[in-house]
Image (cartoon, rainbow, N blue to C red):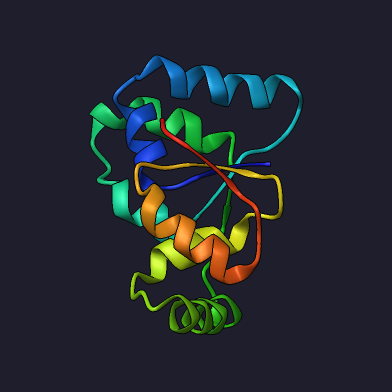
Length: 124
């Protein structure tokens, strides 16, 4: 599965080719990439200039950050010694072998290790 963090969505918004190629490849395999509402809130501003981002997000599953996710994120942050709830919530979306498109590899790596999952972190 392909998971998008804020950096990945920003790269799509900017039209960065590598991110679009990755996204289109996943969609061509009829897989649905995912993100969550907290990440979307970090990047969404509702401007007309975000048409590319809106198009990409329309093909994604945007998961909720609800109470169970919040509690799990808090426990993960305590284990990892970190404090960014959005980072924890995005790592919780990924399973072993999944890819997260991110510009925040260092914190996400610590969180994935604390969770005991092997997650491929790829630059946009």
